[in-house]
Structure formats: structure tokens, C-alpha cells
Image 1 (tube, rainbow over the protein chains, first blue to last red):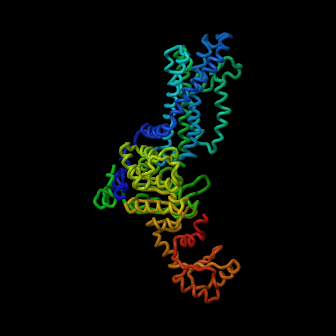
Image 2 (tube, chains in turn green, cyan):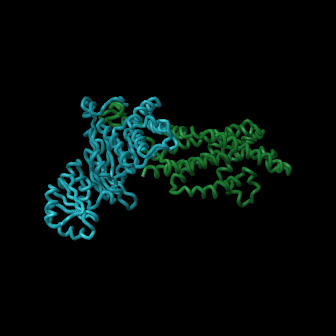
Image 3 (cartoon, each protein chain N blue to C red):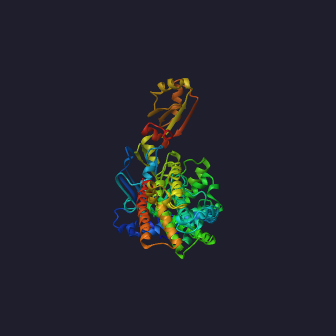
Length: 284
Length: 334
């Protein structure tokens, strides 16, 4: 052990106490990418299992419900489904619902745990990263996972013959956008929690009803009229509608803009809220 | 980016640029005036003043809840002050937090390591937070792991490390950006004695290298070993300031005579000793402390009074005695 092995003394800016306002602060996205890379380093240990389930889940669901249940449904006529088989109707809905699930699971326990269990957010907050950089870094990671999962889902759909249009590739950005509309407000919720049990309430009363009643498994028009507005208000319904319109090749400019605008507004509002909550939690 | 081998002391002597930067005194790295931190109704830090000079090891000694950690978090620019002035590296922590944090090293009270990753990966992630290129991180990682004696564990999961090893890894991590000031919040709390000594040894080496250290502790031996200068903190306020020796000279006597009596005799002995030739007497629950210049002489006098303690000990004054004198409480009492 020699003395010179230790980094000592002033590092970045010399001994002269040079005013650090001369130090250039990197742009916000460059800072967010630093946080993204920390999530990616972490992901290196778990990506195999995660890819496995992003292939296996669609296979199981499309097999059991699309084909198994679908055979029964198709016998009773498919006019309510827009004249396509149940498998073709269901697949893009499941893609969107899967994106909701990915976004939700990524923005609950991992966020909470980064403060309470692993402390990695606290470590990052002691470095040049600001709370907003830490948030955006994780959102980038979430967006990346959403895109990868959607891409695998499309491959499985193709294998099942459940795609009707090449526009299906646009389900990837649709899934990412809808996922972020979930992730941003849920990140705000998650970082503010004192207790992880609160997430069970979110799943029970938020995610599961949405999963079942937002147009994934059957058209919302089948619901009683009084409850339909509630379904139309969910981000999942807009995500399902977008993905389905691209997968079936029935997308219209006006409809697409309306769905994208609605989801973007929620994502933007959620981002502002989450930035505030991250700052309140990490800079106290 | 400073040269890796650049030593602070040498460069200070040879680089006159420091005097022409327009900063009033480039050697004052941190200056707090009336610094205050409130959480709702509770005032954690209640108007403290202190200055940290380049190259010194400066300590905050006090029990749990004294406001030490809150002060450290304000210095570390992760907690905005509620009042007073604070300047860190000549900058404003609220406006220039990013630039300041880039030049600080932080060892938090609780390790915030990623237990599922390897030792090396933890340093890689942390180095990236500072925007360091991978080859630089790799080179520093090798050097730092050697310094904290963890080279053999580089590719092990952090989970498998002992508490002392994790602490040393946290210290290595805090040095990855070659910080100008290293902030340590209770660096050895929760470690067994042997692990504490290893950590102290490493921190002492850093100090010898000229790294500026700020640390909090509620161990008086830690403060005496590591700090050139310290403040005694209690209830959010600074009770005294000086070098360990100055504090002991100002607030205590050269020697302390510790007497322990049987439970029955304790109170009676305390009464009799009230007039003993001591500068000050502290009657604790289990012991009586006499603050004197010559312990052995006073012990003979005590026996002359017809008192026979179960045990007696003559020792030098410590910072614990200073704290007792200043606050009327012992450090561990919190």
C-alpha cells in the first residue's frame, strides 16, 4: 500500500478554489441517462427471467383465452368485436394491458425500495444527480422495458396469426406512451409512501378492475351505459383502443390524436407531480 | 480534472492561483452562519456557526438527536437550510447543488450500497453518477479497493460482506470522484471494535494525504483520534468549539478520579466528598467523578476521610468529561 494509491486532495477543480459556477452542469437528459445506466446495470442480473416472462405471458394468455375461450366466442358471432375473431380482437388489448402491468410493477416496489430498502436513490441524491434526474432516469428505464415487452408481444401475436395490419409496429410507441401515463402518477404515489402495503390497495381497487373492464377482453359497449364513462376515462381504455386500431389497421387520424393527446396529458401531469414528490422525498 | 497523483498539500504551496480567485478566503471550504434546520415545529439545527478549513479534520461530537446528521445533510446539499447562511466550496448549496455535490464525497450514516450487485459494480454505478468515463472508474476502482483492503472481494456480491467491509466499501465509493471534502456521518456506528479500528486507520491515512474531512460521531474516542478541531453539539446548538486538547483544557481538569462505592455507601460517600479538594464533582448513578489536577494525591485524601471505594481509577480527562461538563449528560445517554 503506497500513499499515492489514495486519491487525495482536490479532484475535479484544482486546489485554487476556482469558483465552480465555471463548472458546466450537464443537461438534464445527460444526468437522467446516468441514472438509467444504473438501472441497466442492475437489470443485467434479471433480464433473462424478465424476457422469458414477456414471451411466456402472451403465449399463455393468447393460447388460453385467444384460442381456447375464443373458439367459443367466435361461434356466437363476432359482430360486436368488429367482425374479427376473438383472438385478433383480444391480442392488442392484452398487449396494452401487459404494458399497464409492466409500468405499474416497475413504478411501485422498485421505487419504494430504492428509498426504503436498497437506499440507492439516497446514494444517487448525494451525487450531482437531482431528484428530477433520478426520476427521469427511472422513467427512461421503464419506457425501455415497455418497448421491449411490446416488441416481444408483437412477435408472439405474429406467431399466433393475430395481426391484421403492418401498422401494428405503432403499438410499441402506443404501449410506451400509455405505460408512462401509468408510471408517472404511480411513481409520485410510490415515492411518497411510508408503507409498502399501500400498493396492495392500488392493485386491488385500481389495476385489477381496469384490467377487467377497460376493453381488453370485451368491448366497453357491452357494459351498462352508466358505467361506460368511467371505462372511457381510464388510460388503459385509450391504450387498448390505440393498440387495437393499429393492429387491425382501422386507425383514424382524429381518433389517434385524441387517444395520444389524452395519454400524453396524463403522462405530463404525472411527470410534474412525480418531480414534486421526488424532490420532497429526496431533498428534505 | 485534477491529476490523480496530485497532492493537496504540495499544490497548495506551489499554486498561488488560490489568492486571486475573488473568493475571500479560498481555504475556508465551508462556512455556516446562524445555520438552522426546522422540520415543521421541530428545530433540529438551531443557529449554528462554524468554518471548515482546507486540509483539516473537523468533527461534530454529540449524542443522537443533537442535529449532527441534519447539519451534514445541509452541507451535502441534499437538505435545503431553513435559515441562516451556508456556503460550501464558496457556492450556494441551494442554487449550485449539482456543482457542489460533484466535488463532495459522502459516507452516509447507513450504507446505501446495492447489496445485489458486486463490489465493483457498486463503484461503477456510483462513478457514472459523476459522469466519469469507464476507464477512469476502472482505474480508480482498483486503487480504491486496494486502499480499503477489498481487492480480493471485487467481484463478490456486496450482500456477502461483513459490516466493516461494507463500511469500507462505502468509503471507497465516496472517493471515486476524488472529492475536495469528505463528509462522514457516524462512520463507525454499529461496527465491532476491530472493524472500527480498521476504518479509523483508513480515515487517518486519508487525513495524512491532506483530504479534508468532516465527520459526526457520538464516540469521544473517535473524535479524539480523528479530529483536529471539533464542535460539541447538543440540542441543535453548538456548546463549545476547539481542538480536542483545547476543549479538555478549557472544560476539564488534567486528571479524573473515578470512584465506585457499594450501593449502600454511594450517597453517603457523595455527601462526604462534597468538600473534597476537587475542582468539580460529578455524581453519576454508578460512579463518582472527581475532577482534579493530581488524582493519586486526592485519592489518598479520600482514604484519609475514612472512605474506602470498591474500585478507584485515576485517568486523564477525555471529551466525554467535556461533554458531561457542558450538558450535564453523558454522550451515550442521547
